[in-house]
Length: 262
Image (cartoon, rainbow, N blue to C red; front, side, top):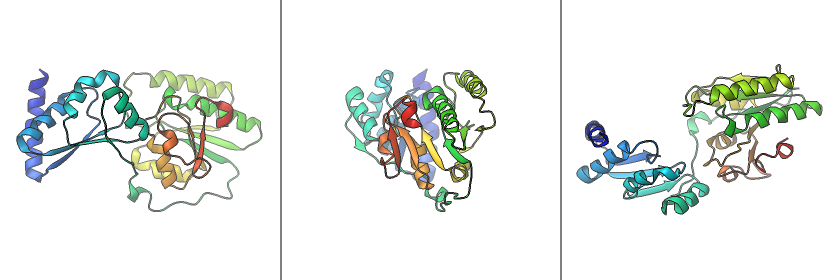
């Protein structure tokens, strides 16, 4: 069945490549979920003579069979030193370490930090899932306010991401209950955002936090925050420490350390 699906996909992709005279194709994290795209590209590489370049954004140990398809492609790239090492250790792949960037046209104009705002705005620009540390962010806000700092927290609820494990609703309920228990209802805002709206959200903030409690492959949000001229506090987890220059563009703190984050 997979061969049949991959054949149909390859036929459609061949038409697109021929009509546009494309000779180089970028495969984005194709070693996940299903081998169909990798099977199609491998067939087209052989029959059309196209070049396939592949970027690894994360590593799953159960994807070794698909990796065998990707291994023969000309370009192999990891988006961070952390992912590069994981690819070597788990997949046996040696590759080029790329340095990711952000869409420049979104961040050409940097909005200066507000100097006359009494209440400081803290932003956590991530999916509202446990791994991103939203509960730590809420507890941090409580400590800050108890200590006399006027601050509020914006938590994003992106509408362009997939809830693979169907856990978001349950976690949102836990966060709502935590906010209520700590009497922070007036100081925590849940903001539904599309990707194109993120520059404006960074412009509204004074500081960006990314307190992930799992090893982030990289974390694009800290790079976006830097492009928007905002300092960032991240946890030393996975590739996050590669995106922030400690004491220069922000701070890197131990993962799960509420006191250090605060």
